Length: 144
Image (cartoon, rainbow, N blue to C red; front, top):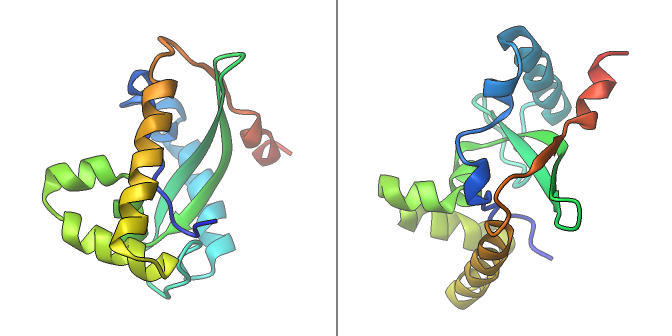
């Protein structure tokens, strides 16, 4: 089990995220919760940093075509670059991301390639769904 892995979003879910769905004040509540839980450390690699980024974690129920928000975590920029490896590659910072993936997972380049291949297979399968229903029940904890 890898500590840091790729989270390739299905094609039909691109450009949709909590920041575009929620009101800015609501997003800040969710973001601050993640930052508070992180206590100044990346929730994946553990690096202490003053600049953490909020990252949405999603699960996909293929039977019901439902995209489920499971968590919002605070992570360092390097971990975020790995998670969104496709964007990172387009931006030209791929070597740094590969190094970070290998360091955090204590693995080889061939392990990186294998994990990327598995992530791409999953992405292709999930991208066959034209439209995902959205389950944001995770956010109910903020209404209590």
